[in-house]
Amino acid sequence: MSSDPASIESLHVLYQSDDYIIVDKHWDIRIDSKMWYEKQTVQMQLQHHFPLLADPSTYYGFRFCHQLDFSTSGALCVALNKAAAGRAYRCFKDRTVTKAYLALLRGWVKIEKQTLDFAIGKNVMEGKTHMMCTEGNEGCENPKPCQTELIVLEYGVYDGDPVTKVLLQPLTGRTHQLRVHCSAIGHPIVGDFTYSLGADDSPYRMMLHAYLLHIPLEPQHLLVTAGDPFVPAVDPKWVSQRSLRTLNATIESILEQRKTKEKEREVAKREEERRKKSKQPRIEEQSEEQRRACQEWLSEWAGD
Image (tube, rainbow, N blue to C red):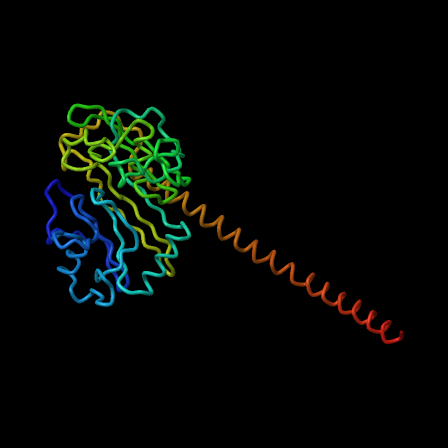
């Protein structure tokens, strides 16, 4: 990932198999578009690099398993056939996918680890129809519960202003969730033109990057990381002044927590199956008892 604008040629593939391609989406490109004037999209990049993999039965030629905002970079999974898309979709639907994003936030976030818990809905105020907002704000329509885990990695400055480098883990999947949650705690994402109401326009990009993507497919899980773009080698305006924890150690901790949750789900699933099986004999016994009662009633009725 660099500070150079996107091009059709600049497609970085992180993983490829017969069923999936995972790319490191550029920060300056849309995933797809129906607009004739959009000459550069991830869809077009894929068609340029992998013309034989495009599926003519789909509108865009490729099946995108999830979404990333136009200004968000990072890991993006693409299914190469209908069956693969269905398997990935079920993982997203069941919320078993693990995602973690890197971000630079304005100001220094005091609470090092916290859960951002704000319901998010559509902003129906005039001039803000493409924005989301937290519950309680004027014009917030149909807010739904949303949670994001925030972990502070480093404190530093960006172009001389205080910023915090964080890892964000969305526990739900609402539109613009990370951007709205960070703005709600008074620490908007650096370069977020939309949720700064146009004020934060000096950075060359919005500093939000999909770093980790884990999809628990069977028989083999998909696990990729898309390198950290928020380093001085890429953008010298970012200067770290104090590190609280390393990115690698934090990701390892998240993956360990994921394994624990998977085991808990498996135990709960087995317990539920055992519980259902244990009910079956009782149902059969009850049915036999009902049959005996019915037979006795029929005998009495016949006797009458």
